Amino acid sequence: MHVLSAASFGSSQMMTITLQDFSGSPATGGIRRLTVPLSQLQSTYGRLLRSGARILEVANGLTGSVAMVESSPAAPAAQSSGKPARKAPAKAAHADVPVNLYKPKAPFVGKVISNDSLLKEGAIGRVNHVTMDLSGGDLRYVEGQSIGIIPDGLADNGKPHKIRLYSIASTRHGDNLAGNTVSLCVRQLQYEKDGELINGVCSTFLCDVPPGAPVKITGPVGKEMLLPEDEDANVIMLATGTGIAPMRAYLRRMFDPGERDRNPDYAFRGKAWLFMGVPTTPNLLYEEEFQSYLSAYPDNFRYTKAISREQKNSEGGRMYIQHRVAEYADEIFNLIKLDATHLYMCGLRGMEPGIDEAMTAAAAARGLEWKTLRPQLKKAGRWHVETY
Image 1 (cartoon, rainbow, N blue to C red):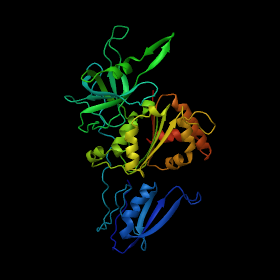
Image 2: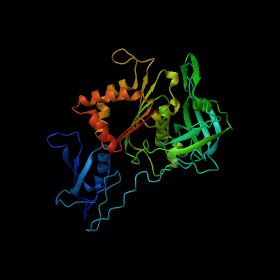
Image 3: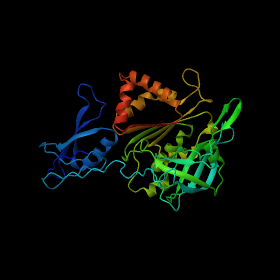
Image 4: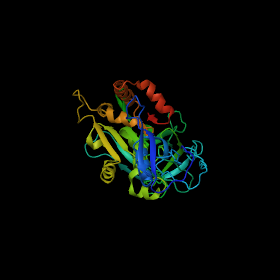
């Protein structure tokens, strides 16, 4: 937030906005000035910020005196006093995030409300949406966090199973908007070992657990994948398979009608762009929800799919998410240039090399080095990764 000294202006006064928009001539550093009537200052200021421009100064167009401005989409106020305004204290980012409310030795015992398949006929594998009741405890969470699950039974060593972490697929208000449930998106792990089909312990437990059954839950944990509090942020999401879980929570918070009613202090106005990778169309998860957001918010939500066994990339091979990133590299990097843009990646760890390769090539084409840019984005809190 930038606060400058205040001066008094008449309603017909002309104002000059000095800004840096990053799309101008390199020789000028993208610095330019706009002169607008004071009556249009509020709308122009907000429009420029939403476009990603950085406001450097708002001044009296004739005398050069400076008006008080805040670098947020809220309107700059023309003050009647000539005294400098006091800067409001900035709210600590994510200061109220709950962590480790329940630990493995004393887990919260929730009860399964529903356990439903997310796949359509002809899909590969098994993926379920599991919702659990949190009533009677203090287990709360925010979007982007994970919880631990302790499956029933004992491990081969005779001890209780260790916890497995799962990204939360619901908003803090839960799917029922009552604030007392949590939902997970779970794929049953299956693999072959010595010619025998092995089922993952916890994923099979969760896919099989019936409504009414108790489930031991720990956490929540994690601050890596939290959404920015800026309602005008741009959010690029790269997901494969059940990596869609946190993205589904973000999108519900942004666009679900009930969620928007529950969030008077958060009305998303930025750009949300989801890249989703799956093997077949029947494997697309939460498709009806996402299509409803596209219909209701076409200017704010974009949805790009990579369906590997049905679509071809530019070289004739299977279409994976990294090919979509390369395909839309120009638009992605134009967004990355904006301080308000955050990138999230979630899914199998094997997706990381492909994304890195695509981003490296895209950056090089623009005279940049992804290996340098990526840690800069990470340090700025704009590059968020959760793979497993």
